[in-house]
Amino acid sequence: MTIAGGCQCGAVRYSLQGGPYPVYACHCRECQKQSASAFALSMPVPVQAFAIEGTLDEYCRPASGGRSTDGFFCPACGTRLFHRSSASGAFVTVKAGTLDDASNIQVRAHLWVSRKQPWVTLDPEVPAFDTQPEDMSAWRERLMEDAP
Figure 1 (cartoon, rainbow, N blue to C red):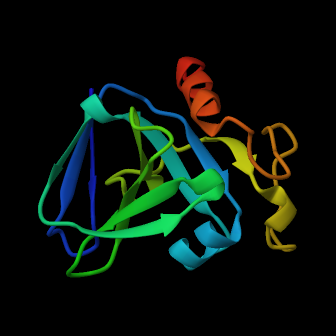
Figure 2 (cartoon, rainbow, N blue to C red):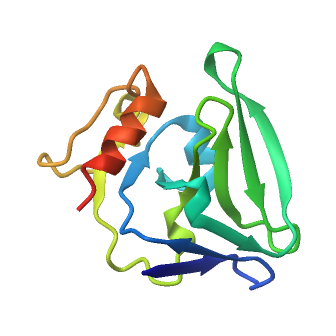
């Protein structure tokens, strides 16, 4: 199976082999700012399953524990497409809203609900974390293993 996506202007395209991949919603302030919304949709994908075409710009921000997170975006339209953390080099985290067809997304977990906007209502059947799992890399790997 091939899944495709890209930026708003079409200058950058990507494809994902395999899947479906799990999606989680992050309600932290960084994701709220990055998405200009109440949360961001993140989809961990193994690096070897991810291919990108086009020129990217990069923004590196410090993360907890001396780590960093690199955000990659289209220099023409500014669409954030994916992140790569220095803590989990085996994965990229695709911004699921950039998929060509996002209609089948089912959020598997909510992170940083302690910072969610008060008007956002969560499904009580979906696991929710006040912050994030302590070992985010291991949690993402388990999430991938449990993907439908």
